Length: 333
Image 1 (cartoon, rainbow, N blue to C red):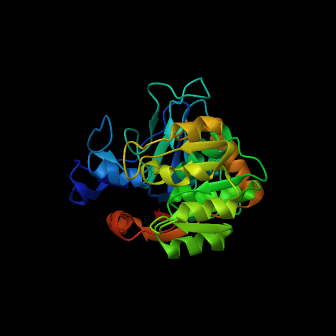
Image 2 (cartoon, one colour):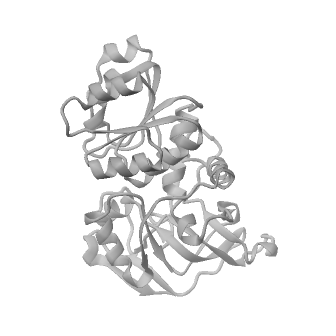
Image 3 (cartoon, one colour):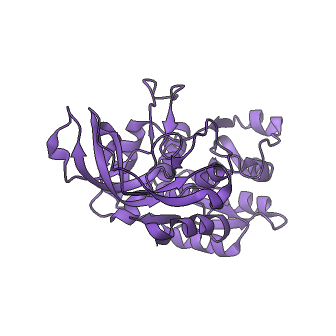
């Protein structure tokens, strides 16, 4: 079978399609014939060697959807033929609040989804929502799970909240917009692109603010009347701007460090408004199941930027790095 492999942390030059033996499921595992896999920015970090504990060669990809075509011993054979979405990680551990030391993601250090088949634990797959085809289903796992945990477990979102999603256009941010709207929040966004803001508003956001414009933070405060929940993947460039727009008791959830590793916090703004600042990443298997059930119940549709066939997977990575602007990039197998 074919897989997308990375031979070394030397960028796109080290990426190629390779032919390997199809894996056989071990006890407790299922084999999934992958129909589509989605890209995340973590693939770009991996290409550059910016990921801990890297080993080579590796198969890229954490997001995938497909059909179970074989099962290991101890697994119900009735699962064969089941269309599924893959939990993008393994070894979360027993504590639902925090992952275990050996927690890891597919596609580094675990096997990757960008290939014709993958073996995972039987309880790491969830039935694909019927309203999603494989391309749309593959776009969901990592980005939507990160947004789900950030908004629900960490952000305690509730209907009527005024939600600010920073960096509209990225996969996680786009899902945060969709999920927030479906949960009854009034959504505001930031971006450095007016075109991206227009697309976010078309999805249902009430308004957007271009952070390259002077006074965007004052406009946000005036338009919203105070933000109850912030979901931010780039606090180095944003927190100082929206800090004064936070409502009493606001929650700020940080899920990334795009643009810088640290950011200044105005202490009086934090304690006088009783603001809660939390970090989050990924999500546990139960949160994954809950998220997929919500996507199914609300019939949510991911935003797809472009899809590429497996033969053009290297081009898909190049597009993610240089041309991507809004939504997910998916590779069809």
